[in-house]
Image (cartoon, rainbow, N blue to C red; front, side, top):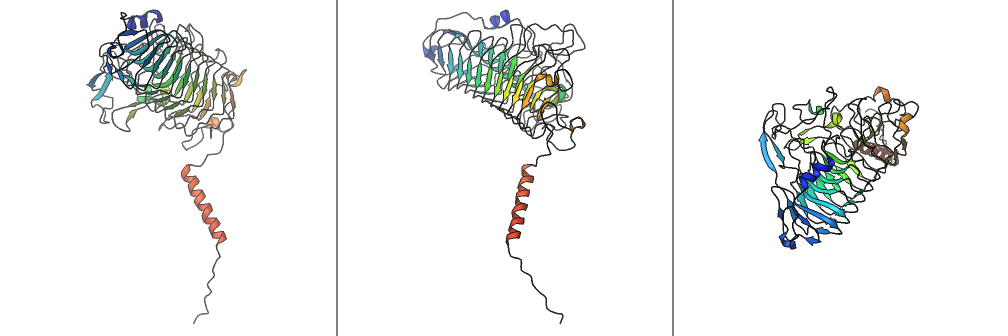
Length: 483
C-alpha cells in the first residue's frame, strides 16, 4: 500500500501491530492494557500502558466511558543536536528535544458496529489515540486526544484519531491537539459517509523523526532538506518522497480505496503545522509513468468550518520560533491537491472561513494535463488575510490553478460562487502579481485593496472630526486698526 505517507500492507500491517491475545473482560476497575473489551464499561481510574496498546473494543453496541480518566502510553524524550537545525533556545546548532512513542501502539481501537468511546477523559502518548478499523456506525465523542506521536520512521501511525476503511462513523465534540507527524484526524482508505463535526483540531505539528532517531526531517521550505528520511520513489530516482504532513484533517486514499461522501462540518481547525483540511490525489505526482491503483477521493463535503492560522510549521521549543512548512509543503486553509493520478473529484466546499493561513486560503492546485476534470463546488466561503508567511511567495485567498491548464474545460469544471475572498491575490501589501491584474477566470474579480482595521478606525475618526467641525459654529475675531 502506498500513499503520501504510508507504505504498508493493509491486511497485515495493522493486524500484526494490534493483533493481541484476547483476554476475558474484567471488572471496570480492573481493565488492563491490551485487553479486548466485549461489554460496556467505565474506567474507574487511569490506565498506564507503557509498552503496548491500550484497549480494544470488539463487538457491537459496546460503550467505553472514560469517566474523567486517562488512557496513557509512554513517550521517550531525547535531546539531539543537528548543525542546521534550530535548538530549543532558538539558536542554530544547539540541542533540541524529540519525543516519540516506541512502537505503532494505539490507545483505543474500535472494531465492529455501533460502538462508542465517550468522555470526558483523555487518550495520550500512543502512536495513534483512537483507531476505528473496519466496521461502521461507531462514535468517538467528548474525548481529549493529545500528544500521540508516531515512532521514528513511522509509516503507519502518527495521528490523533484515525478512521480506516470504515463507514458511517461519528467523530464529534473532541479536542484533538499536539499529535503528529501525520494528522489530527485522518480519514483513510475506503472511509465513507463519516461525520467529523464540532471538534477542536489544533497544534498538530510534530515533525517526522528519522529512523535512527537523531534527526527531525525538515521540509524543503524550512531551508532545504537537512536530512532525508522516508522512502524515495522505487522506480523513478529523480523524484524524492517529501512528506506533507501535520494536517488538521486529511482525506487519504490507499490501495484499499479512497475516502468518499464524508462530511467535515462545524469544526475549529487552527494552528496546525500544515494545511487545515487536505484532500490529495490518491497517489503522489511522481511523474506521468506512475501507475496508481485505487479510486479518487470523491464527493466529500467540507462545510461551516473555522480554519485559521495553519501552515506555520513545527514549534522549536520556544515561543514564536518555528520551522516553517509554508509554501513548499502546503500550509493553506483548505487544499485540494491535484497533480498526481486520480485527483479528488466532486467535493463541495461551502460556508467555511479560512483566514490568516500561511499560504492560500482555499486552493485547488494545478491540474496535470490528461487527468480527469475534478468538478468541485466552492460556494459562500470567506478567506481573508492569507499568505501570512513572510517571504511566502505567490499565494491567494482563493486559488484555482486550472484556468489555463485544461482550456477545453476551464477551471477544471470547478464552480466558484458567492465567495468573499476580499482579493484573489495576496493580502500582504506590495504589488499585485503581474499575472493576476484582471479578474480571475475561476475564483472571481480582483477587488481594490481593502483597508486594514487601523485604516478603517482612522477613517472613522477623521469623518467624525469633519462632521463635528461642520456642525460647530465658527467664531471670527476681528482685529482693530493698528494703533
